[in-house]
Image 1: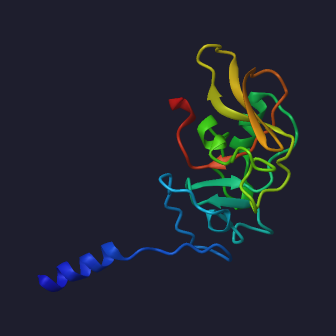
Image 2: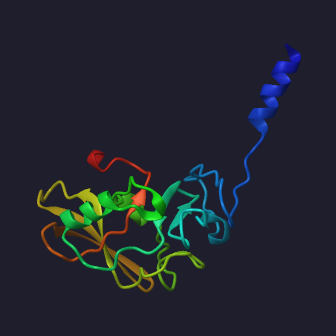
Length: 176
């Protein structure tokens, strides 16, 4: 019995070390209680198909498309694009919630994303979120990224003003 307890204690005390380069496993335990440096926060998922198509954020446990769609769409079309996405051979993509998308940004930095981030094609785009404005039923939140800042606005979902930046994981958009 003492041996069994010792083995269980050893298993509970053993921590997984995340890899930051190369193929998985990646151990995506979210760390919302701490700020990870960019060098260990983001893992480019090299085993998700030809080239790196997805990025794991170890701080939140979310998996992002490395390069978001750069075409401005209506909210409904952006939602459909994420729903139909098959990035890295994986389905299950969605528009991020406002909280999910805002978790990427570091305000006051040169490009509003953490230094050394692995994303491509994200500057000067506005991104739709799945978060709908409860005070204006035809609106959803749009996040615009500029060098050094981010703006959030409630925008008519029928306006073709935002691009989809699809994500896997995170909270349910219906809970917003």
